[in-house]
Amino acid sequence: MPNNQFKKGELYSFVTGKASTAIARRLQKKFNSAGLRITIEQWSVLYHLWKQDGLSQQELCHATFRDKPSITRLVDNLEKLQLVKRVASVEDRRINRICLTKTGLKLQEQSMMLAEHTLNEALEGVAPGQVDICKSVLQLVYDNLK
Image 1 (cartoon, rainbow, N blue to C red):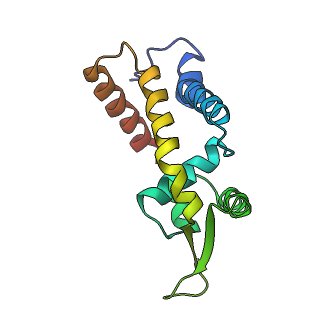
Image 2 (image 1 turned 90 degrees about the vertical axis):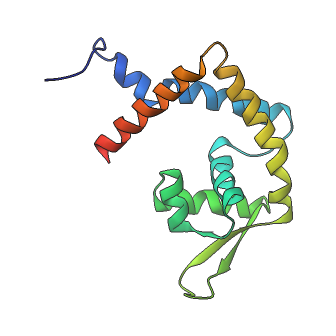
């Protein structure tokens, strides 16, 4: 039996990114105001490299849920900004590792602070238990469809 308790179209607009779009727009405005010359998409790649530097482009595809052409374009643009560089893998020269530059590393603290402030704004008035429920439900939705 279907468990769809939403009005027609209501679930789709929410699940497809209404909340994440609002957060991304707010964060992009904060980046622009702070003089950070990166997009949210570029930041999402940097975020994963800050967690683990030297990921391959394929690993970045999986981490960011993007396809190969999108990651290639993002890495190309991050290279132009001198935030990352491609380094041939020692184990397999066909694979490029994406490594942060000093400039890319310097962006971490400021951009993560802006991201934290944005999330705090987004979650204002939301009880911690509600956040846990939301995370669980969205993870279940994702798991059902992957």
